[in-house]
Length: 111
Length: 113
Image 1 (cartoon, each protein chain N blue to C red):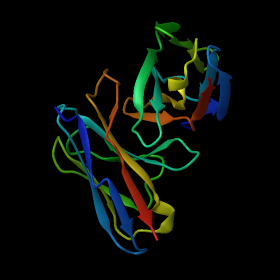
Image 2: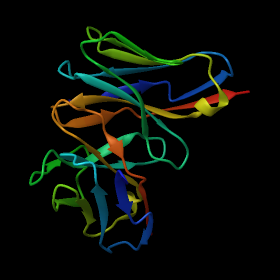
Image 3: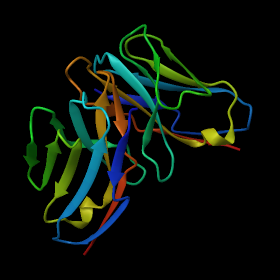
Image 4: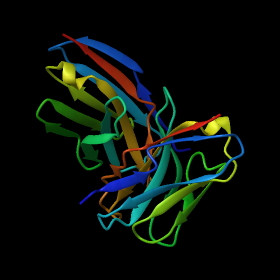
């Protein structure tokens, strides 16, 4: 079935450290994998995405990696800052029409 | 360019009441989506519309109906609200085809007592 698993559910790091969030998906036909950041009381905002023909993508302090064989993808945040504190969601695109989301990771960055 | 807008922002219903959540986008997007978000859970797809005139069920469609009124508007109706439908509801849209980026509205916080 259509499923996205996300781990961990909570993650606490010291400012300046790195944070890694991992997701797995079930459908090998999925070809698009976005990551969303949601601050408290706000809407989800797209922060980075990757397509299935690419293994890694970077944008300043954030990067996403994709392993199609294992059906894994990960979000990496380096040099974390307090403003990175939020809930992060991964998602996978299914059947050409819909995104299925993971259950979210609450990231807390302590000064 | 307002993007994706939703009304109302907040709503309190009694069990059994009905209401319609409105969503509109001004980006000329083909596909529109309704999600619900519950504490500790991700965004779960209720219904979606890949193009004007079509609608399809998502992961949790029971208790809801939708209408794709035109290309801009996609409404979600609760015919007989239940406490289990207390949630934050997000509408989203995307261009369609090979353009996958999805943009979210600000959400509607619904409480059913």
